Length: 257
Image (cartoon, rainbow, N blue to C red; front, side, top):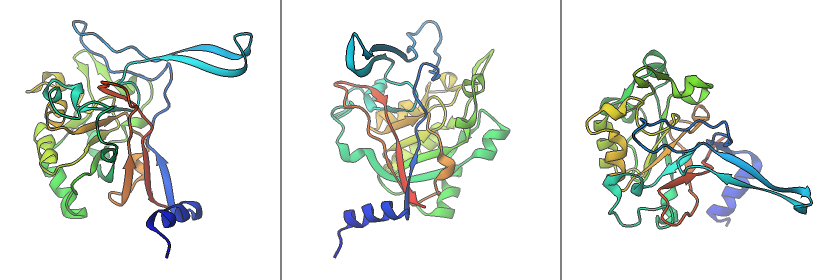
């Protein structure tokens, strides 16, 4: 009798299951979050060639890269925020690998975000989703589909005179998801908080609440429109950076074709 893993590989090969890449391309043009001038900002990505089949390396091509841990599609570890700084297993090298994999719950708020770029997901939206699709299971990745990843250039960061405008989670929604004991949340925007969240109480409430509870964040996702509301599995494993507060990563979802 075939094992579950053997059946899994066979269904991938047969096309019964598909792999959806939820990761944005990472390069020098990848946007990074902006912070007020009083704070240190993260650099964008730079790529410097080491050799390219030349005198510096006749048979090989490779590069030096420099970037902040939270650049492009990236993982936020609990230690990223002050509320999570004293937790056990709070860095990218100490989090148990099994915690990077979980079922996906995709909450579609595309229409609301098209009407209001400052839209906040509330507990009522989560509860409505659960009425339609069942309870959010323990250890799930809750992914907020906004189609924000389809924006290009300046429209992605969407910065006005009063700062950036992008959707996010109401603090009460983050608290509810912590109570549901999720792995963390994933968004299509540059960070897991709303654009205006620096003025909220507490500032950046999703970071404050999620990381204080030992939960994770995934930012700058894409292709959430290719996932069903339930039934997908997400694998989101950051680089094993010693003491890392996060890292770029390749986020993969596996779901029925």
